[in-house]
Length: 290
Image 1 (tube, rainbow, N blue to C red):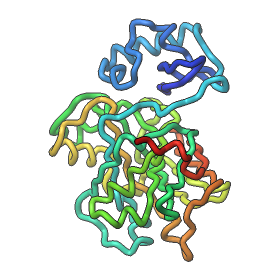
Image 2 (spheres, one colour; image 1 turned 135 degrees about the vertical axis):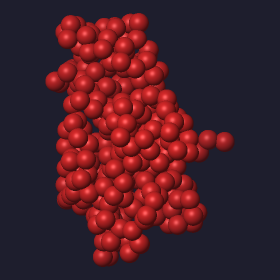
Image 3 (tube, helix red, strand yellow; image 1 turned 90 degrees about the vertical axis):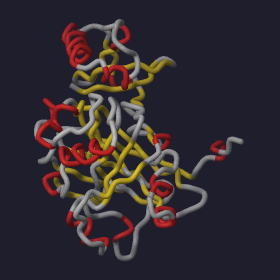
C-alpha cells in the first residue's frame, strides 16, 4: 500500500494510491485520522480500514490532479552519515565502527516535487539520495531481530546538504537543516509491498545524468541495526523518519566538485519505493520573516 498526504481543492488530506488514482480517505473512510502521524499511531486497524476503502473503488481522484506533499511531518528526522563503503572511500574518512547519527530539523521537510532553495549564504549545495524508513509504533529497546515490527513503511529522501555549513558545526545539523532541504516521498510504501529493504536499487540523477547508482545491500548498518541503536537511547514514535545514508557519487566528492546550481533538477528513484524530483531555485525573498 502507498500512503500519501495530498492537497486538492484547497485542502490537505490522506489517501492511498491505486494505479493512477488517489483514494481520498477523508471521504472513503471518514472515521480514520486526518493526519499521517495519527493515522500511523492507529496501527493495523487504520491500515486495514484504508485497504478496505481502497478496494471499494469510490472517492477517487486522478493522481495528476493532486499535489503530493511530504507523506508525513515527522516528530524526529534522524539521518545517518557514512553508511555506504564506497561513499566513505570517496570522502577519505575511516569506516565507522558505530553509526554516525545526526538530526535534520523537521522544518527542512518538503514534498517530493517541491523546489529546493539555493541558500543566500552558500553555493555549496549538494544532493544525497537515500532510503528513509518511517516508524509505525512507539518503541524503545527494540532488538535488531524485531526491528521490522516497528516500521510503518519506506520512502525516498534527499538529504540535501550545504557542505560549508555542514563542516562549520561538528554535529552537522546546521548544514543539513536548511529549509526545503529534506524532500521526502512520494509516499510511504508499506513493508509487504517493498519486501526486503536491503536489496533495493537506488539511483540519483542530476539533469538526467546518473550521479549515484547503488543498492541498499551495501548499507554498513542496516535498517534494523539502526533501529536497535537509536531505541537504546530514545523512544521512537509513529511518524519519526530515519534516513539511512547515501552511496558514492555526491557532488562534493567529484573532481572538480560539481555543486548544485539554480535550475538543476535532482531525481532520486528507489526500486519498489518510488521517485522524487526537485528543482533547485534561488532562495525566494519571501523567506525573510521577522
